[in-house]
Image (cartoon, rainbow, N blue to C red; front, top):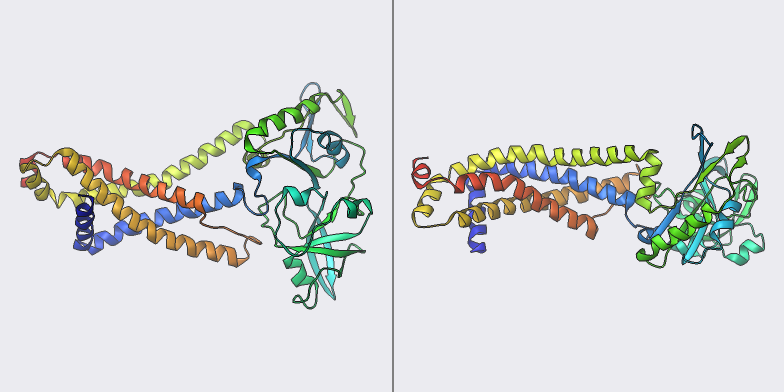
Length: 414
């Protein structure tokens, strides 16, 4: 029966090419927008290179200090000492990494100035993250203990800095801010949207200008707590927050006297929204706005397609009347029209998938987002299939329900 419905749907599409073109254009355009948007959201918050362990990581991004009246607040990154004293003695995480926020630096290749983002990290950074090493290896605890001036650079820096990028970069020297470092490894570059890992050059936290010896609570460092699996994340968070609650209060940070100290430890999505929006109600508003936009993107084209489907099905009213006269139940007619609409929706979805792949390729190769790696992975594909089904049902159920309930006389008269 399903095969017959699909054959009928194909013949109906060929009957009026213009209506078919309009319908497919509306479906494919809408689904293309939704697929690209889904791929971009997945690119921002999904577990991707090199943060493939996001799903079991807690991000410690900033410390918040408030006075006793909670009328003044200081919110900033933390010092290495503050984070090390708390996180390095935790028992529940599998690993802990402390690293700095990106810092702008300049390098010179001959007369050319190269603007670079640098990051200071501990050795665990390379174990919590999963970088692709094109050459060499990461620095380890021994390199850090020896105070070695070593660096890991990206493939982009290698191509821009060295005269012959085809030669190995490991063992060569790179000079930044009048300090010379030995290149120990070359990694594939990280998209700028990976806020915790994106940089051009990575140094041990003990090299000059890292400010790791600051004695206060605030500084320019952040941390990631990697749990053994997703189920243990709450246990890790509980232990960390227990340590935070034991810190002495009140205190003084520079000129600021504080009575309340909080350090959120959050999954990536929660932290990402917190960076964009400081207030929880604003986060809820943002999610509401995104949901509204998604519904509008699907709702308006759906209404137009409902009208087109009503017109298309009305032309077949005599067919409906004859089938009902021979005893076809309403459920069978309803199922036929829904299958037909889902069929055309999936054709539009296939066209949209081709458009989406083209757009993603253009974005990845355009350089608009450095090292961009948007893709149609399993998650994005699954959401795309779900959108096709939802779109097909929304635009097909109402017309089909209306037409299948026509009386035999009304149908034959139409």
